[in-house]
Image 1 (cartoon, rainbow, N blue to C red):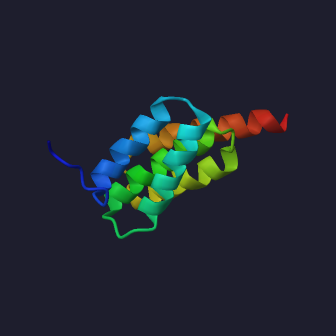
Image 2: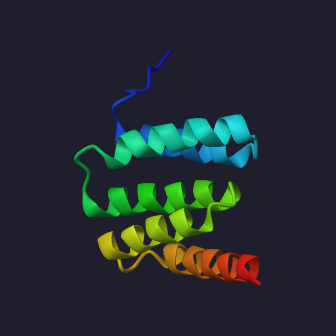
Length: 101
């Protein structure tokens, strides 16, 4: 059987996506841990942007809209072509503003 390298950024991005897809708060926290470790490592800008975008999704699902917006901003800075980050940032900003009303 093939073994996945736990240091491989693509493996960790996939792991985080799977954890986020369950909608379990426990799995979401695990995804945040994986993504925080990933963003602290040496990545190319496109991979780092994907990690920041997923981190933003995790924060968004937790209702942490300001943190989500920060992660989406970081993703956009790293890869201005990552369209999902723009859409996600708009959703987080709208949710944050709705919470202020």
